Image (cartoon, rainbow, N blue to C red):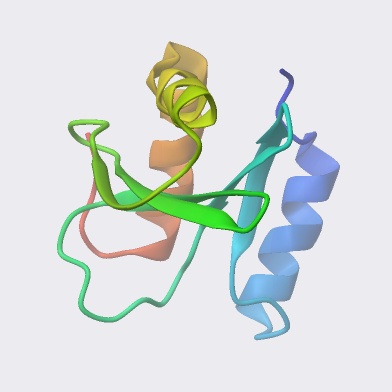
Length: 105
């Protein structure tokens, strides 16, 4: 369940800052992919996007509740639990804080 190494993170940030990438894939866990998008309109609550085999949900980075969408129940539970993991929470908050003016603490 290791997160991307620092070299890959640097490459991703370089792509984002130069406009060559519009999102960051934070991690993939059991086929579940976790993304933070840097420039979304109309979203008030800090969140991330989670995708699995054509399904997608948005999960709050504050309450860890599903804001919209759905995944198969077992995968949705795994995704929420992954987000709640203390080490993963810190990484997700760091991605969000770097992309948005609203800071997650």
